[in-house]
Image (tube, rainbow, N blue to C red):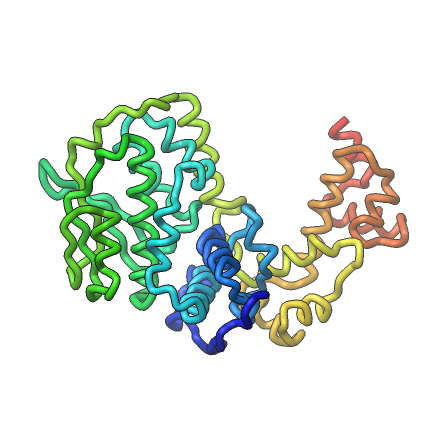
Length: 358
């Protein structure tokens, strides 16, 4: 039987920030899912961690989901407080595999050299859920470094994020070129933890805590190491798909509240959800939801119409349902009302949209 969730401060915010990127839904929920699974393994109830985030336990298992830094960092704070597992970052990171990186893992695996794989990983790190800023630095003829910096000045979570990042990077690099790869040094911009011996066991290199910045140094000789899975065509295709995931249609990621409303609408289109229904499900007042959408430059009706139009087009193009059934699927009881609405949304009647794809 799962133990009750530990008492969690629901006012445990990440550092206050007016930067719109703070609430932009652009990160896969990898970290959230790993921590929830860690809670499951230890019989801890993680439901309280989701409070006020417009997310559910089921949703974070969806690879198409994107969350904001605010959502992710708030969840991680609550999880670490409840789990009481100081080395959670190392535990999660040492389980890292190239396959766990999805398309990015494929792009790295089919790169020509380890150096090219590293550059692909750094360029597209957001799509594997990395919540740090990453850079690559050539320090000398012998040393290069993967450098990590906290986003939004959020130093409190730096140990967890760095442990998970550097441990998983080491595991993946060794998967690509073999266990002989040994870092030169690991530098970390936070105090030495009580479990530092775990770092020594895992990384097997010199450790420097309270350093000016966080970085993992390796010998430059490894950059030219040829990879056995090199396939230039596959690598190019995978990188193209990675780039598409980095930049959503329209060029900018949705704000988290817009993404949450869209997810809810898509799951309930046939029920024709109203603004107050959506607000209640998201644990917000109707007024608060209107305000949050307005701050993101959106209104509920415009989001609802766009979601309905996209779904109706998909169903019409599939060609398996009648126009009346398509209308019913997106919340219209009257086929004539659906036809009028669809023409208003798209400039054409449903029959024409269907013929255009025949």
